[in-house]
Image (cartoon, rainbow, N blue to C red; front, top):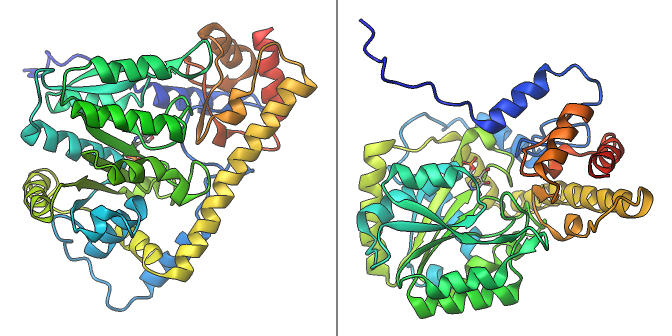
Length: 406
Ligand code: PLP
């Protein structure tokens, strides 16, 4: 007998659906601007030269085995990863106050962080809730729902200015019940590409401290955003300096091009060294029940890169190659729209936004027209992955966008 007749068919993941439709399309000039993965100027996935090099080093290591890693991960990876995001001179690092655990990339870090909060966070009168930016990476909703923390949203994006809804955001921080959890994108906000300025981050930190809120940082694009690992970590480091209670979810998918290797970490910054030890012991218990031990290969690759100055410098060059290409595409798209085609509207946000994605500000009809008439695939919220643009297709894209909004 059919035992699972009560299981309804789930809808396909929308990005997956977009990619499938793109693959089926036989139009020669088709463009995929949906997927959040870096492509080179030939629209090909890019294996970072430094990753090729460390893969070779690992392969030739006669001592390499396939034993389990410790439950909390490869220690040389987690400690270097903590320094990368927090800064080697961070008071949290020098005070030994960070509980770091290797996770299944950024998604796993978000999950473990959410699970940890669901077990141990002292939610205030606001209830078991997490504040997410509107909009945010859609997976945040499912990740928190899975651990029985209800996601609710704070204003973030202002469609009128195609920028940050700063005052409404700040007002929500102020009027929320004390001790709420706020999820913040450390840099290169997904999907909007809109980040607070440093001055605005300072004001956000002030209110979070005043209200006793908790900052749940998601950092999926360090270095990938601006090309500068330090600059992209600024907000997290500033919050640590000011003593904001926080954790950071870290991913090496984008900045090391290690999407499939699932290399990431969760760093919980504790008030004392002793608290960090207790927190790490509980994270270890949670990790044990979920995955037992994290995967070794990707963590070994990143550990080699982070712990050798020459390889680290090479990685920084590779990061600048990726970020630089994306920034060039932003400039060229802006130039084509505003100068050459004189497309109606203001397009400055294309160059002001940061990271993999750009919110073009076009409505869902224009997005749909782009897909149906021009074979350009993008999500209906008007988000484009800048990595899908290159010197060969950018003019076709700009001309198609121009037609869609006229
Ligand atoms: N968080 C944000 C905001 C993201 O955009 C992504 C990837 O798209 C992730 C987390 C997690 O990615 P991964 O699990 O591949 O590291």
